[in-house]
Image 1 (cartoon, helix red, strand yellow):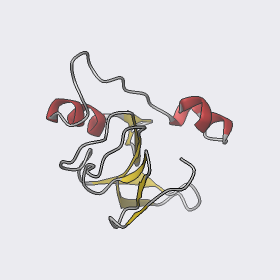
Image 2: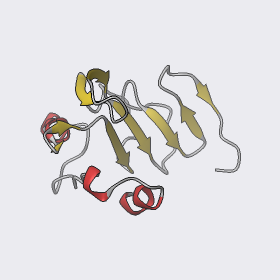
Image 3: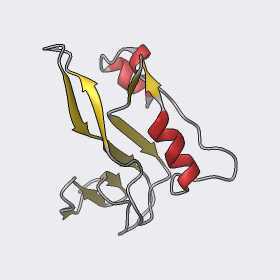
Length: 119
């Protein structure tokens, strides 16, 4: 995913990677706390992308808003954190509030579901 984001034009200095600790998973409070605390250039991350770990229901992966600096205006603003889950498992349950792309499943932030064709 890191390489893909860089190929799409995202600066490598604006990407942080967290590997889940051995025996852990993204649904554990300790792992969520680590992801919530990651900062780049003194700013908490606006987006969290979870790979192959999100195919079960539960609370949101990260909580709360995050203050960011608008790259166009230079002004600080508070925005909701966004979570994208990319998974190959079939499931009908995912963490709350996530944008999900999984085996035959797509759910946007509002929680609407649609079957994906050709996945």
